[in-house]
Length: 353
Image (tube, rainbow, N blue to C red; front, side, top):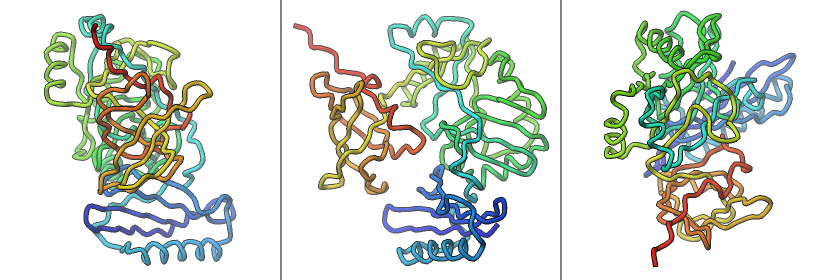
């Protein structure tokens, strides 16, 4: 496989672009990955079907020339991790998605001795699969994504195959669940079994770029919950100790739930405005609802119309649907537009009369 990593650094911009030629069947594919340095990269292909090597080489060389003409340069200090071999082919692996826990239900779970708590990280959801010498990242939609080299090097140290679920934050993978290890598949078992098995596994080798997301046991849950909240953490996840790992999201409720200390939601960009601002929309059934505008920080590229993005906000106004004090967090290629719906929003409480 032929590949190159390019990087671009100017002012607040610090970006990475990777390109590769991968053999497939009787031909070759040209794949690419891009994003901010230290982040989980977005991926794609310049070829829809395998092509002859000379054609792939021409596409690859042209792509590299275009990027270098825009100021990208090769360098040993560029973030690496080659693009996946088939970024547009579903892996057949789907992650478990959790429903939110509403504040009025919080005490029922917080004080329940059968629920274990973990910190919710402010990163990008990723599963990591090790299959022999092959290491693959998988996003929340089940498609392969690039794994940063520091994480991949740590994964390669473990002698057995495995599948971990977690979140990538820069060059660190925060593991919170174990799906497979060697020939074992503990997904039908309770979370307590999977967690303790994962803790033993990660305790058996050196992995500075893989962190175990520790559980908080029921005797400390209330105290640590308040501590996380005061420290400005993203939120927490509650998991029933006997809950199996089930792909997809329950229609409602479930035995594993998330609680955010900050309100966030996914939106669709509909228009680029002046002064680095974009307009946002959400779906409400078959209707389109405006959700206000958000300013794009200088260290982010301005997203094009149609892009799914994530924003933090204080609350939304019921009448207009606009979000108040929005903060742009980045694009979310791993979230479908159909998931950008108004029921994500937390609205401002009505003033008392």
